[in-house]
Image (cartoon, rainbow, N blue to C red; front, side, top):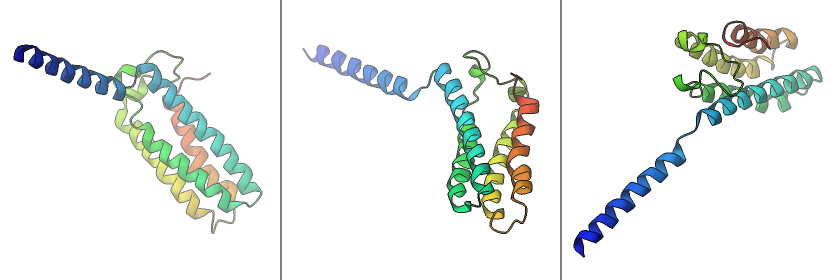
Length: 149
């Protein structure tokens, strides 16, 4: 009887461990779709920011800048080695071949969104500030790390 109880306890522990591990692990599909969704969200928010700034609605644009900044930091975890291919990813192998450069660009893009939120307070030329601190990062990344579509 004691032997059966020990076996049952061991099985419960193994089952619990397996269940918690699988709940925390994302599949390759979830990771790729997640990063695509974040980039898409960033693009949609960037377009909204442009519209808001053109209308001089600066305070409404700032939370979107913060969201984009946060997404760039989250994206650092969305390019593990096993997600190079599949699920219509537009990510080029250069991301993994130049991981430090890619990560630095994601961090710079994040920091630049925070700088943009501050710069729009005093900038005379909001379009130039956007081009320098927002759109230039998109271009830099797409030219080297994203497949043309």
